[in-house]
Image 1 (cartoon, rainbow, N blue to C red):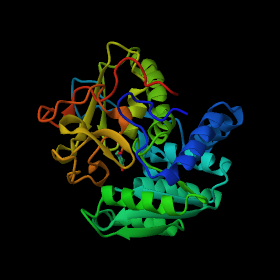
Image 2: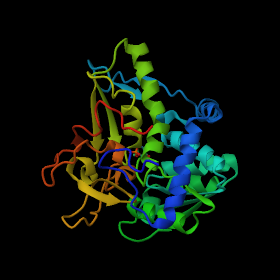
Image 3: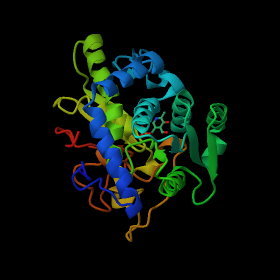
Amino acid sequence: MSTSAFGAYGGRYVPETLIPALDELERGWRDALADDTFHAELHALLTSYAGRPTPLTLSERFAPGKRIYLKREDLLHTGAHKLNNALGQVVLAQRLGKRRIVAETGAGQHGVATATVCAKFGLECVVYMGEEDMRRQRPNVERMGLLGAEVRPVDFGTKTLKEATSEAIRDWITNVETTHYLIGSCVGPAPYPELVRDLQAVIGRETRAQILEAAGRLPDAVVACVGGGSNAIGMFSGFLADEGVRIVGVEAAGAASLGTGRPGVLHGSRSSVLADEDGQIADAHSISAGLAHPRGGPPAAPPRPPTPGTGAASSISPRPTPRRSPPSGG
Ligand SMILES: Cc1ncc(COP(=O)(O)O)c(C=O)c1O
């Protein structure tokens, strides 16, 4: 079993009790990838349920004279790319015989996507969410409730995504026999980052074909926001082999873990994190609940960690992903 698909990053920094579950998940994922029925089921769900392919829209008035295209993942069912990952993981969870799902959410988009797939497949669903995020993302809390999910408030620390993720992991440790942890981004112990990347890669594949069709050429650059890194790595993975395409990840200034972070361990894997010199995780802040994460996931981490103290001060990470060779292992 590979436990680190991303060089010095990734890995499994978890209690011993979770290792068998992670092994089972990794085996299940490899089996699914080799199984045509899995691909057929997921493809059917993505097209006839989720609404893929999503459009690529030329943004005509935003920057006159420039050609900026938007990949409209907001038009996917439930309103964000999170559904690509939730659908794939729920099909996998069923293959593993898990009937209870736990998840963390920040903006509530991943929580809504998870609640939606659980409602579709008749699974029990518990979503952990920081109280501060519940306050600022109220409509999504209501949506999760309407979909039959239980939203459990997390009231310690910053009361946002970091603490919600910790609580979801604690629940998973306690109920690992029956429960699948449907993680929402390219974070967590292996094989999660790789699995989420593979499920979000549909964004990049579609975009590449659509831009060639619409513009007759590849773009000069692809740009994506980075919270945990899932939409970014999904988009970027379509262009990693294209030398001439600049790849730009944009982080929230108060949560620029790739641009200004240091190597460290959080939520079960090693990545570039916001931390002090002793490795204590610092609080992340963004007005965008989905971006307030003190780490980017391993696949979105730079090939070499920035030297502590010399990371980019701007919120734009110049090279947020291994450029030319897609990470090994799937
Ligand atoms: C719409 C949207 N975009 C982006 C993100 C950031 O997450 P990621 O970096 O995993 O794509 C979130 C997170 O909640 C989100 O809801």
